Image (cartoon, rainbow, N blue to C red; front, side):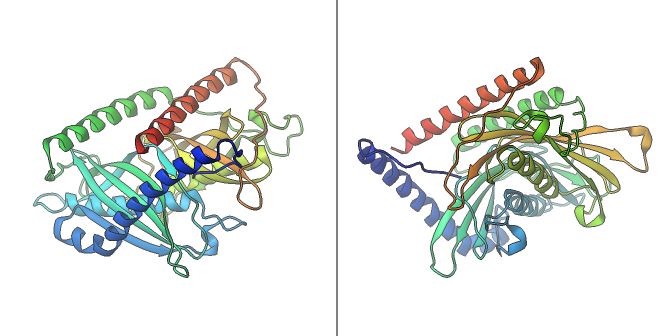
Length: 382
């Protein structure tokens, strides 16, 4: 989500030039997405490399001020990715399989989606390795009353195909044809990078986060980590699961976004929206009948945004010997908005102890790194 602050007259000309470049780039992307919306279904059926789904946003998809929850968008993104991945992996003879989500790269919420708009989700396979595939997804929001369209989200997801006969068996992925050797090489580099980062993240997140104190605990000072830390406990049922009886990645991401939103709202006590999500790593599967504990806590706060670490721990009710384990982890970024959807300052985070200070410094490093990437992208567009 991009939020614009009031600008001074001195910088007005420069900002207008930058905005014009961004709008031009946005317009070209919208034209491409519009083409995908018209041709996505046909191309997907013919080549198995592109798929498009659309759905109108309803009141139960949004918060009290009409912004569609980021978790709803993430769930739709994952559904499109799962469909195209599973379809592609079953185009050859052999074991029938179902694609399982293992990672979502950093996802930017470029513009909010509102009740009554139609979300067009277009997914395309960009790279295949022997046992995994990369799907890039774009979400365009269309106001069907005025005809206006906006590019709302972009994401990259990684899937592995699991055999329907044996969920622990990873089947081979049919290769795709690349437009050039350079495109294939770039995809291979993305594959190697995400594989390495996923392994490193799993090693760092094995610790189980302690349960938060009750929100009614008056001993916790406002604007501290402990005050806003929150958990959601959910029993995994059949409607949450795939044909393997394991949880859909989109269901998990929706729960994570809800918890992160609660944390952000408790810290700011205002309307909040998802601005971006750092890489979401799915470390272990969650089976039907498990109880999942989704815990979120603030790690870093700037004057405009909040970074919230969210982890998902799972415990089986029928296999107690397995104990609790870390299943998913990610960092969500939220911003605070007023009644007119304009950004508000975020209250500073009060740090208590060395551990919180360490996490704050790590969050600050991620914030500065992401800020540098956004500035580099803006310069590239100019």
